[in-house]
Length: 165
Image (tube, rainbow, N blue to C red; front, side, top):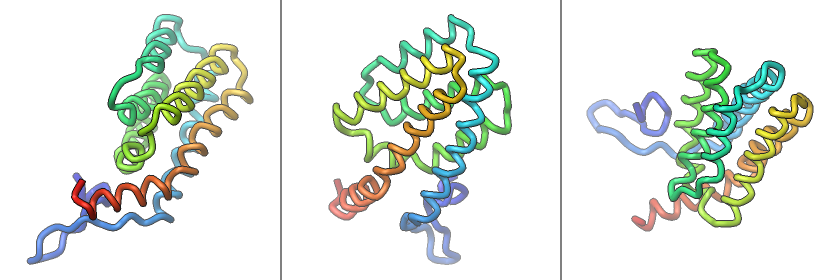
């Protein structure tokens, strides 16, 4: 699975080695993720989210879990699941798996957690209000915010890996 997701390289008769992050590839993943999630929020804003599911997602946003990187991916995937588009869900999950190490290194402070929660809440409010343009702006802002932190997150991950932390 690690080889399939491009995180580990298999070398014949030598074994496996951790693949160095390719910044271009990471930025491309963010671009594809943005395209998919723009479609998700557009569709959900037009068709709506049942109140029970809306509240369940909102409650999860406000749950200050210790593994917020996982909660962040879960939030975005839960919106995709509501589209009932299995291919879209599968592609988004694959992208999230490949970006997980960045999320883990990025969402580490209370301030970063607070901003992400506020952004998720805004996305949900725009969807509920039926405002497609604002929902698209909100999801784009959220994903771009994460993308802006990529280099620092990768540097942090490499430093921790090098130091054996």
